[in-house]
Length: 433
Image (cartoon, rainbow, N blue to C red):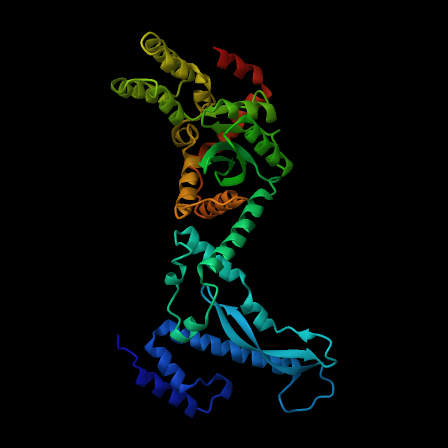
């Protein structure tokens, strides 16, 4: 492909001028040649700013009338020019904007073209994208596109403090959006709850799974630890925003007793709870010598992979008996909440959906995305900074969510949950066996 040299660009402009095109769309030959040396993007920016200027002047003519022609019926008049700013690629660029006032001088007439391009929303969106992608506020300016030396020398809102202010504003909006979401219309079949440790505080996050497999962040609550008080406050907040717990729902938790206690208190004593088998494996193995962990881990995996509930429960009980004499702490850890590690199996769920709902890996993956957005933070400030960053990370991760694996079995899960809701005594008998 042949290159378009500056001389050729200039010749093209001269030929365009020779066609007697309207004056408002003819650009300066010197400006185009200079910007062409800095690259196509710089040239495009200069052309775009020129088009904006001409657009504003055209709008003035439309509102006021052609310049130099008296019109007794006009409702507005020209009032010179003033300094303005537009958003361009994550920066604020100065422009000269025409002013229009009413004929009686009572108010200024706003130009739609200027209002459209001066909006700060695109600026904060670009800043949020780059900061969440890992760009520090100190290095933000280095990530800007080359839009020409003249524009770069005059632009602003790229300093560390300006970027920080814009991100705080955007993150605070994200936090408010997450905490104010209405949940009335969600048809959930599963609710995952887990805690994210952050700066000696704990953010308890709720993630819902709808009947079609869509993952929906529901809310977060900050506390000192992942205790029953914090989880109860979170669940109460979900109820206030319309989440109905009268429908059958499976709760997936990491195994903390505080979570079970809060769920039973808020949702109901007969709520099916699935303990995370990954956390349970870790808790049991931590009570064992290293040379004993491999065979115990293999036994646990085999039991949880079993599709027949009585057989799976019998395997876990046999393992607990085998550990009782030499490693009583490991046996006690295994027995604690043992039936709840098999809830999905008891409900008749198999395959990929079973593997998905047997653990909190789904919400742990969300946490890993949140932690990546926070890796540049060296010191946490007071106030709502922790919550802002967590909410911004959650909503950023949500954009890349896929439906959960095994989603085709969710209708089967909903039916099993419905049967258990109607006959809770049967579930109690099975758990006690």
